[in-house]
Length: 224
Image (tube, rainbow, N blue to C red; front, side, top):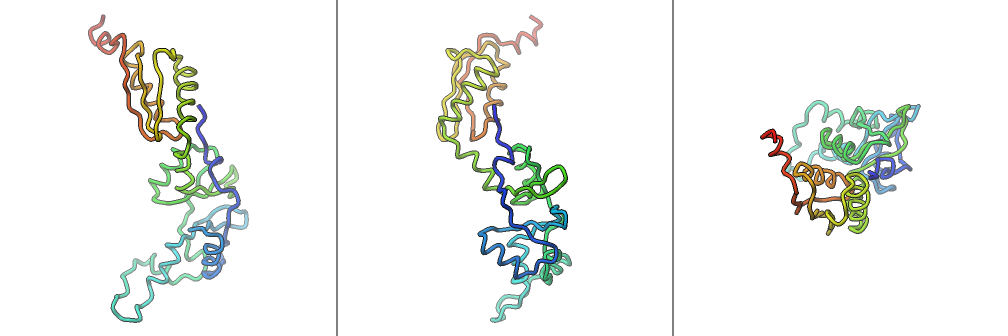
């Protein structure tokens, strides 16, 4: 099976800023390129941080309401420093949380989740910026056609990897939802089949309608 990598999904032509890029230049980068964040790189093109719309909006949120109806929000020291910042190095979230081109979608998604970020600069072996991958990029795998998912599961997984007879086990896919039907030799094979199906790019869910010829779990527990 082929799992798409970050390199296949990332944007390669990356708009980047320098540490001394001004607030207005950053705002213009976002507007002109229709993006929501820009990585900040050093002189070796290595990401040192990321400036997002949220970082820039702190300046607006810190301003007094002309009507006097909305009080100025309390900001932590680091938030106050960003709100008062005028250059990328003062505004950016740092250090930059980065991914590698060879990573799988799962690896990138887990890092985004644990670090609470919406995009990852992608770096090569020398930590130089080669792309950027966003949540939207990772979600593109779920746009795969049902026919492509079905063919990969039936041909590559069930036949090629698990060596199951197509007359015994087959998979159907509708809107990314996989149903595996048929009969396997051993009961212990069922969770293996279902778990491998979940790992196919584009699969939303897996339900099994599998039976078995031999309950090897029972035989193992009784010693027969």
